[in-house]
Image (cartoon, rainbow, N blue to C red; front, side, top):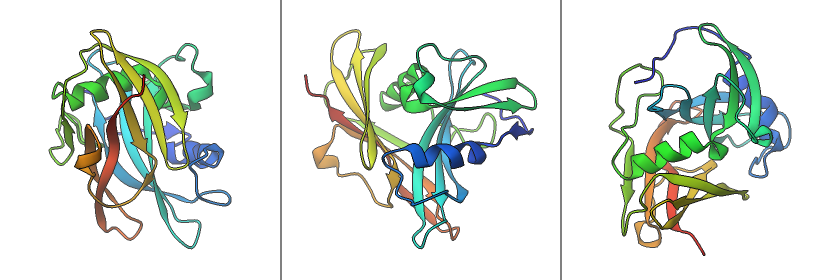
Length: 219
């Protein structure tokens, strides 16, 4: 399991996201955000090379606080052909230089999310090493998509990011990453599956909602 180092990251994740969020089509603010950590969860990379973080941040700069889901990956070297998904670089106090990516473009995050949906990966506490997070619930119905999977498309919308994955053994799915978070459960009747988890609102109230929805992908 990944080790959570008690050290510094310069600039911080919130500082990187403060510059990056306003460039996204799903950002609802009108200027520079003021971000608070809201929580989330992690997944482990089996090879131990890539950090995988499903992070929620809340922008309190406007009259109405808005929570955003920002899946992140942290790498020790640039990811080839993915400069457009780079959020920024930072210096980790233990690991050295880290390249921080929008995780919807990272094949390692996508593979581990697929494994989570199929019951082959265990969600981890966001800030404690070697600690599963049983509050994260993943479900998938219908025929499975045999892995390994390939990321074949990414599209940002006004409230979500859709990625299309193809299984090497056949099958195709759309993984819809909720970007603007709202408390509430998934509509199981209209989807193939979902990932739900909690986060903290700006007033420290606990909320729970849908991080990812699984849909049949058009062919």
